[in-house]
Amino acid sequence: MELGIKNKNALVTGGSHGIGKSIALSLASEGCNVAICSRDPSKLKAVSRQIENFGVKSLAVRCDVLKNGDIDKTVKKILEKWKTIDILINNVGGGGRWGEEIFEKSSSTVWDEVYAKNARAAIKALQRLKIS
Image (cartoon, rainbow, N blue to C red; front, top):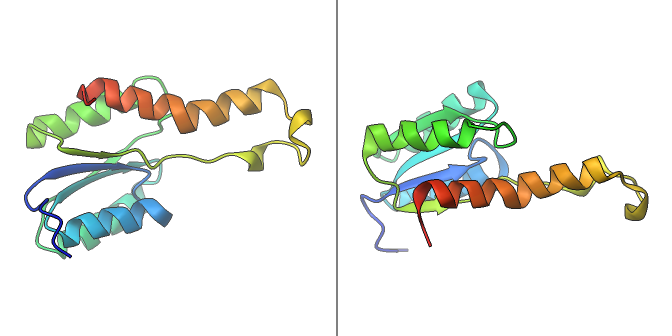
C-alpha cells in the first residue's frame, strides 16, 4: 500500500515490541525513517536493525515515559539527528493488570500510573513536538 509517507520521520513510543514494533516496521516498509523508544535497550537494538533492513534510517532511544525528562531527552535527540519529526505514534500504554480484579478496589496510585502511561505521556510528546 502506498501511503505517501516516504522519507518522512516518525517516532513510535513503545516501539520495541508488540503493536509498537509492528507499527514501526510498517512505517519503515512505507519508506519512513523511524525512531523508536522504550525501556529495553536490547529490544530497541534488535528492532532498529529490522527497521534498517527496509533501507531507511532508524534511531533507538532508551526512554521511560513515566520518568520526568525522558520524553524531552528523546525528542531532543531525534530532532538533533533528523531536524524534524513528521509522524508521532503515541503507542505506550497499559492498564488494568496492576490493579485489583474488581476495579473499585484498585488504589489511587494504580489509577495515577495508568493515567500517566496512557494519557500524560502522549500529552507530553505532543507538547514537545508542538503538533496539533
